[in-house]
Amino acid sequence: MTRIVTDADRFVPDALRGFALAHAEEVRLVDGGVVRAQPLAPGRTAVLIGGGSGHYPAFAGYVGQGMAAGAVCGNVFTSPSTGQALRVAEAADAGGGILFTFGQYAGDVLHFGEAQRRLRERGIDTRTVLITDDVASAPAGEEDRRRGIAGIVCVFHVAGAAAERGDGIDEVERLARRANERTRTHGVAFAGCTLPGADHPLFEVPEGSMSVGLGIHGEPGVRDEPLQDAAQLAQTLLGPLLAERPDGADRAVVLVNGLGTVKYEDLFALFGHVSDLLAQQGVAVVEPVCGELVTSLDMSGVSLTTMWLDDELEALWRAAAAAPAFRKGAPLPPSSTVAAEPVASEPRPAAPEPGPASDPGPPAPAVVPAESRVAAAVALRLFAAARDAIDAESGRLGDLDAIAGDGDHGVGMLRGIAAANAAADGAGDAAGIEAVLEAAADAWAETAGGTSGALWGAGLQALGASLGAAGSLGPAALAAAIRAARERVQSLGGAELGDKTMLDAIVPFEVAFADAVDAGHDVRDALAAGAVAARAAADATAALSPRLGRARPLAARSIGHPDPGAVSFTVVIDAVERRLGED
Image 1 (cartoon, rainbow, N blue to C red):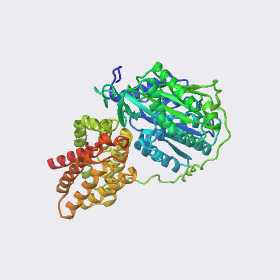
Image 2: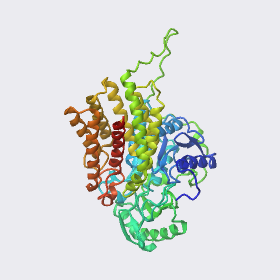
Image 3: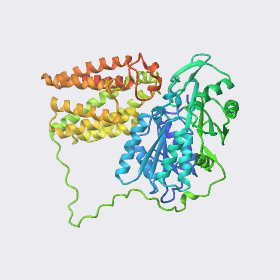
Image 4: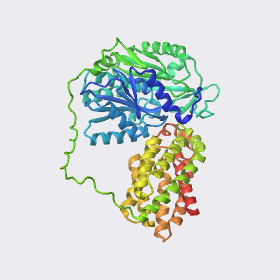
């Protein structure tokens, strides 16, 4: 819980502004996050990190020499948007390519992935290394399905130190992957955290218990166990990490991380027992760190990380760093502003040649058909109705999301649909349906962030493009547009029916709508049929076990409760159906 009262909607921008002012010699604020105050030397690789806010010192605190060139900072526990990632990348780029590295979460993967695609289209060599250190989120052998938690600090420093010494992007990427492959983390929680503006924690741990296998977005652990003393807890946390110790590994970095309210003396006591256990196993501890490294607002919890070292990883871990929240070794010279040998990267597209003096300039805008403008006006009324419905249900959606996730779904949906409504309204009276939906799509994805923001933005954009190309807004054209939107959402999110996602409500809606149209019904009747099918399907997700997203590691907790994304989809569709019925 935040004790210094502020507007919850202003919490992240206010905190970032104050952070940048407090560390003005090291970082500067940009739209979307922070970058180093001094630009990188020409030709250097820019290591960019990021994720949701609420984890300080991650992510902004790790921007500096020997660490990241910039951090993309989303809303609390919500992935940054594609636009944020692009703007931070543009501010940090030094011509040597960009390496995005962040914890593996669906929303981050979607938004950073889209940013990578767009940067590559501009000729900027861009790579991504996903961090997957949490042993509780998937079993051994399925490491690529794991989420990233406190082990991100190890990868950030290895990649940042490699870039600082002038390694090219190929080598920086290789070393970041090597660090991730040899990093493991395990954590426990003693109490949940409370989002800014909320009056209760996202989850509670039974008295006398601890929740084993926590996440850093306010998620509870995968199981509850009785509280343990420091010596027992050291064994509980270290056991799974030793089980995945690489052959021949006899050195390790150790991070003991407090999640928000477990403070330093407790962490030191735990580290002493961890150190003893590692010594018994013949493992030497190299430059350990005990402190708050990756927090979860005010969560009471602790995590243990090991990075199993080889010679090249040890040299990079021992390298100097100077960031607001991470300092190692002797002070670094201001090498970031010294010219470096240019590193080859894909050529950037040349600027277009100016046209002749008689160039008539861009063509006049196309005339928007009256039918399209009428549809746009209807869309504005529907966006307003959906916004009001989500506003009324945002608390329930957040509580539902908190069962097996981070509890931010209601807030994220409200931010997204409010921004979409404002953007659609600002498109202008002469705008057609495609322009209105495209403006709404961009605003939703930009403002909401997270997985749902990316998916709703993509779906609205596909809906508008299909309607714009159809030249007709009749029932058949709308059915085809709904199919195009579903296909785009499914392609981007990678979900299938039964994965317990919003797709489980979208597909029945699409089918029922199309069947009603084929039977000769008008749009209102088809929409009513689709709404009924979507509600039933969303309710039925309660019996499913999630196979994607943050809820997957907590699948048992999710069973018996419907998917928040499927429920919020029905809230929107119900509001649209009711509003159309009033016209």
